[in-house]
Image 1 (cartoon, helix red, strand yellow):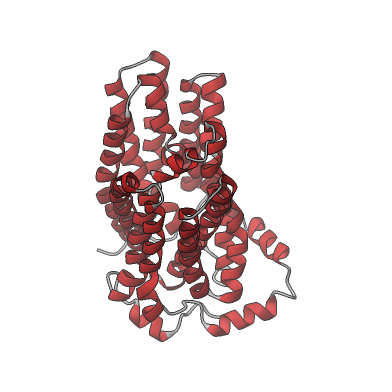
Image 2 (cartoon, rainbow, N blue to C red):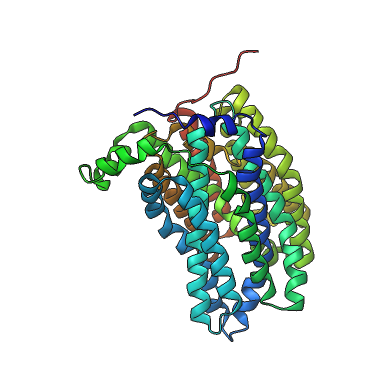
Length: 416
């Protein structure tokens, strides 16, 4: 088996900013993230409209994450068995259908079911796109491809909540209809342009091999590979260091610690997005030019430093201004590493089992994202906020050490 894609796909994807990539990768990313951002502000309000208490209403967030977690491994298997294209289409279509169903949901259990489907489908899209980048992305392009993808998603998320708030003021169900429509629009160009990045011959070989080699044996082979095992452990600690910021727990902290209102939260979120996008894009260039670790190791060290600063701030009860400095510091540091683990995973994914590899990869990452705010909340509630931030700082430092010492560099310094 070779690692070559079809000549037609290679020709279409020859340029980093080719129309093929723009219409089949970046355009869907920004439109889907815009739709997700539009629906996000309406989710808690819609849940409350069914007369649920806070604890029960929080299930709308939990079941969405649960859908993503449970989707990881099955999606990886399907990517290797059926190819990339069917999964990449199925994900957004199911997301759109789930959003339309949410808009007409008449009970809270219905809402939970459709949120679970949405989370499952969202993970299908995420895994399919990174697997395709691993298939066809050039060694010196993957950094910029992934960070451009992350950057366009961030841009969509910046605009989405404001639009969603306006639509929710007209009807609480309208944002979900908009999300569904945008999900369909996002993949329309792909119906005409997208070609499967896994050759038919490779899929046929995979079908023949699967009955002879169990999936359990294939997964165990990955876990016995020392370089991949180190990568999975680094992924777990990297995800735990980031999960609290991504989940909004940091914003919850500023509400409880400083009694801040929604205006302050909006300013912080917007500021983090504005400073983050250009830094993320620049990091992609650096990774392609000088190697992956040039941004990853310093980035996670900076994340750990910012979280350590926050631990001292929480312990000594420093001012809101001190928190804002730390928040922006961490946002910048997170942007330096944003997308970097995906790039490293795309570099190291076994060429003949990329779908299954990314199934494990995404499972580890999603577990880290769930553990992070959960452990943070337990430590904050039963010990102190300073202990919670210290835990996250340790995770960031451990990620930096593992990446620096246990994960090999996949791209050397480019010749000047």
